[in-house]
Image (cartoon, rainbow, N blue to C red; front, top):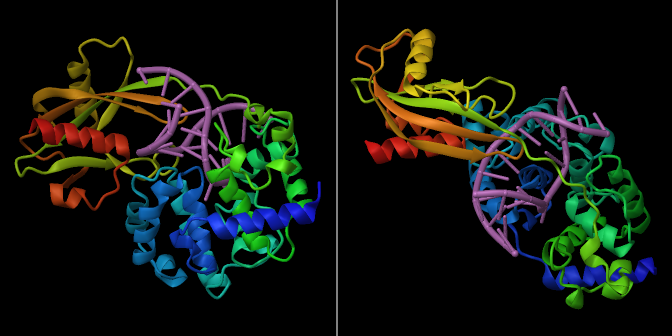
Length: 351
DNA sequence: TAAGCGTGGAC
DNA sequence: TGTCCAAGCTT
């Protein structure tokens, strides 16, 4: 393959066809970094409104470094993978304290920051700092697996290095920033996972997969197994002031540090669910539930497991000692994951 | 290395 | 409804 021709045609295509996106207004490393974190495993259309709001709330490194924990979680509410925003907060505080507020411009230093792996490091270094570093994401592996007919399993972590070497050998040293973005843009708009638009691809004459007519068989990716279902019972409890009882989830693991209604795991075969609910609730909160009513079921699929939650509403006459009671207005300031929002919607509907 | 970690859209 | 994701990182 003629590398120079490949670079020129890819870059020309990008100049004519790339999307106007809010993180492409300038090369502010902070803005680039935030976009890269948000875009991890997340679609562009989903990210845009979150990104706009985030930049209004936290326009600079200093603003985000000084932000409260609850506010930074709220900025991420509904985006998923919440450890991303905790790690980003840690990273930006680090930058603020030890790097004079400037995102590091060396692979060595930027890679030390929490939540910044090989892809994000390469993306910031190339896009914001014009350094010829590979930024190998799913797009790049898909595009390169087709162009160069690379048949390694891209589901395996070790495979990324093969693509990094290939990008290293083919990247434009004159404009690595545009080059890396163009590879990803091509993957997003032309070289898509299914039904790639090979007939309008600017480099189809240099694509080994297209030449052989095997673009639909690449990349090779082994399937991930789907997780099992966990069953819960959960209760939206109201006191005499109309306040609701919420609790903070553990600081590690699934939906860490987010808020939820009291809930208890049950066996799938469990009968007398409301009786079990009362016993578990009274043990945890030492308070009596009355007027317990089933209000529906919430089924939520995560990437690795499924929750099936039987939801109840109930009242307490006397406030229980533990737990946090909030008005519905206050509730809006706490970060609720999507399944908990679904439970709240059931409560509102049945009120 | 493989598993854990969210969500909403496309097919 | 089920499957496969989408600009990955941590442990």
